[in-house]
Figure (spheres, rainbow, N blue to C red):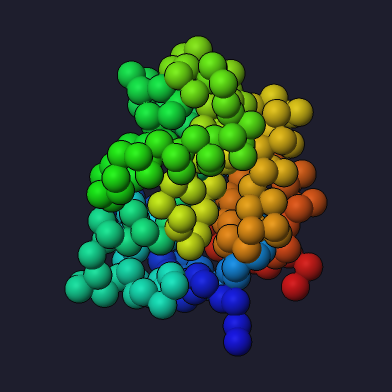
Length: 228
């Protein structure tokens, strides 16, 4: 049986701007599997973040199909709110933590929205943060009192809160120093290789290719597999 969890087929997306149409994604096709790190590298403006947002249903493509865990996310009957809550976890470059909430509360929030009991929210959030190396006084720290690396660890724990099928990481090292970025990449790699998650990263940082099981280059909206 295949471990394929994500399938993208012939996906295209064009934005209309004053200067004319801009093609962000041009007939992108690829698959990603459980237990593997899939990486898309490319310069800023190449379309890789748009592709990630389309997979996460934050943007809608013009054409193509996307299936995640057997769910056609472009089908008009698909509950996209439920899809985002159950099937995908996002890790953003700028963390996107809520500044008025503590580390623990940031991770608990997505479970609260999903209707998880308060005691289970606390237990699971504490456990996930501990796995990320965030514990003790940091549990009650707010984002502005934590380092960039600590914020990103909290963001990864939050992405895992509802046990999603796919982790979508947008430039996860882009706001971090080299050493901290390597630690974050190692955490994401372990989620795939040790815990069986499907991890999809988009980045301009080609050093991430070292932990990738499958990699693509994106330029002007077009995907090309590396070492195919």
